[in-house]
Image (cartoon, rainbow, N blue to C red; front, side):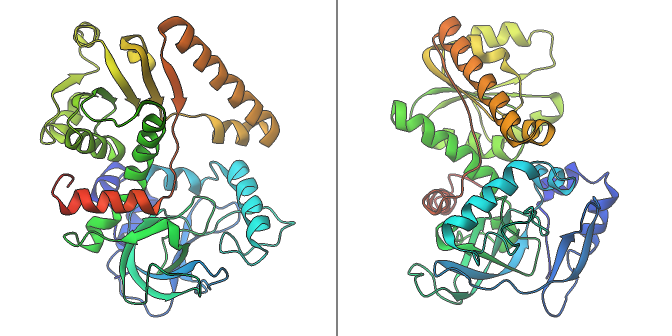
Length: 356
């Protein structure tokens, strides 16, 4: 099997000819190493033979990919979204780890641009670097690659050992590959919150935009932590989240939405996954508003690395100041962060039937 798509993602992007083509290859048996490769400035992917990545770092792990998913981030990166920041980040990692780092195979004086996309994967360890202690060939693992690295839409991928964990024993490779990127994005926000406020148990939480991958994981995780969970979705997302048993489901397109939200005011924390800050005024003082709509990557693409970063920093500072001054609320952006510890936490939740 070459590649399997997360069902939700495939449905979401089924209108794109690019991904109809991608899906057509999903169950094709291929010999050697093949990958979906992004070439030059062409916004289309090409299925072609690709060199098997090598273990250039002693902490690297070579994985035979059994399943991978397509995230919205992958779709946007086909058209070079985030290339300015990710290229700079990849160069910094390469300099810190050596010119043969697994981050990129490009020379240091060239623009770094990953040709193979894909974050999520589940697969089998084929070989390990000499400083790898947590895994051995034959282990079934899952994880997500760094966006600045060569991705998982390939028969083989190389990642550092601290990016992966043994996959949940009660899930198939296909099911496991649908979890990491979305779940790790949410858990990076949880870690930010717990460092400052303590455990997120028994809190009143609003998830704005709860029908996507991050949102559906968030609902299950928060319920497992004993939280009272309110979810904002559209009418089409209602059935998706209903089965996850949140305490309240609000249709953000309904006329009475703001009134219903106001009645539930006093949230300890809001996870804004939809880019709508309406709920900011309904967070209780000293509460947290965590937003997943950072403009950093696009700003750097539009304005360049320095100007885009300065513009984003100014915007964040402004939002932090206004939220604190007007509402007494802590405001922050959230980002995907690879983490073996978080993957192990996810594994335990899945095996304990807390998350499905």
